[in-house]
Image (cartoon, rainbow, N blue to C red; front, top):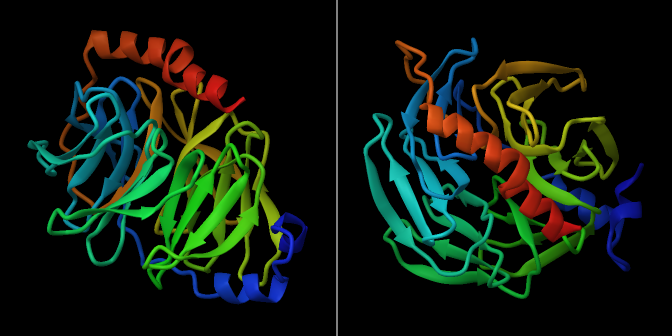
Length: 302
């Protein structure tokens, strides 16, 4: 498939290919941070061993990790973003209004971008704490990713669009990609797109071609790209995290003790033990996975 079949009317393929040609990411460390529906934050090493960084995080949603290994988690009920140090020390990083199932991502300057579904916009939190509206007029922003030039890409799930914004918030490009959910870039300048209801991952190459990287997945939810360019995907209705190699082969990377939502790679850290979450957390995970967050999400998107 060519990208021209997925573009908004009037957008030329050559323009899109040129725009996508600037995409790249830096090499990633080998620890995968995983956020469960019940509010447990895990750090997983490349061999599948894991440790709990923090637990009992209220109404957890978006996840991002900075270069120092600090994890940032959105609390969608209290409209807060928490910062967790590698040792699990928790502080309130920012308070923002109106988000529901937010996605959060850092740029190279240390600014944090937050999708605010209820307000239909994207908020920018600068490194000094200053907040501003980066983009507005959106419908259902579910995925955010930033390219090497500082452009921000946003998946607007209900509209079936992917918008590209300059670092100043100017909408440079709109792609039509039905059911686009989460976004990520690999080191070959490919834009990867999960589609929650379709159960697949698309790969949009710099030359504009679109291929299916993997299909028949079990409700792909969170996504992050590893140092080996594999896409790591959390399954919405199981406890598995899948690894999708660049050639499209799918394997189970690790089975966690509870359902996992968002994923993000960050700096490696040694793990000396593999603690299990408490019994209430496992129970809450089952309730949230089957009868709570994801059911609400699927109902709201249908």
